[in-house]
Length: 319
Image 1 (cartoon, rainbow, N blue to C red):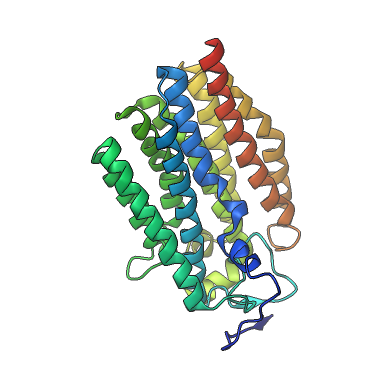
Image 2 (image 1 turned 135 degrees about the vertical axis):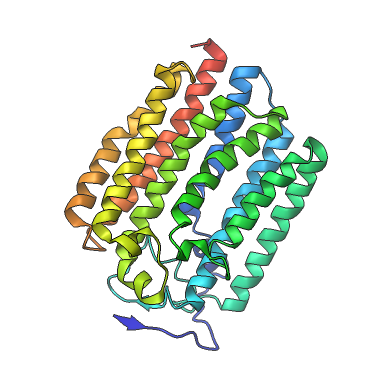
């Protein structure tokens, strides 16, 4: 394992846009825009309410915010020497985007990108608050501040074993309830319950991404749950997140809190089971676990889209 220290001149390619696409980690952004789309689908299906302009603002805001969060996480982890280890055993789904360790962008350039993204996010949230009311400011403040202090000192709760819970709450209830409020100017029990499905899937996604980084995280002091309790515990936490997500999905239908159509989300179960099998067999091998990293992304996408489709079907058919 080698260590690469940033030099004064980044090793740029011919495409100036490519490093930025890599930096924002597009593959991890659906956990932002799918929950807000789900919330809008719930509001429309249940109450025939849909404000397309407000939805577009929320969609853009959370997506750009996630871009900024990913870049901020990269900068702070790099400065704390979390992501400076690189080599042939790099798992592309863990350890940051790699634009800093590969010399594609400098820390200052990435900081500039963070500032632009957060500036756009704040502007959109103020606009939405003017349109929909002050609670939008509160919800936005929770999301923005928690994303900043995910890795920023002195809080940096991702380093203290609270990052997983923070992501569960923010990428579940905060996003869904915030988007739902923008549509209806009120909150509801149903979107809160359903929001826990993407929330727990996000929990599992972050946990499985921490497992290959166990050694590096411990050395750098990033004491997330996996670094604290070990990779085997991470496997258990991953499975627990999946169990909670699919249990809540099915349970919400059984108790009548959500329409039967969202059971389409169970189509992701075979892929989820496959990811558990791979992780159990290869959790000590950062390369052989890659198919499990890919699988949880598929699980999230299938489940998220299925939930949205389920509500749209309910809105059209009443089923």
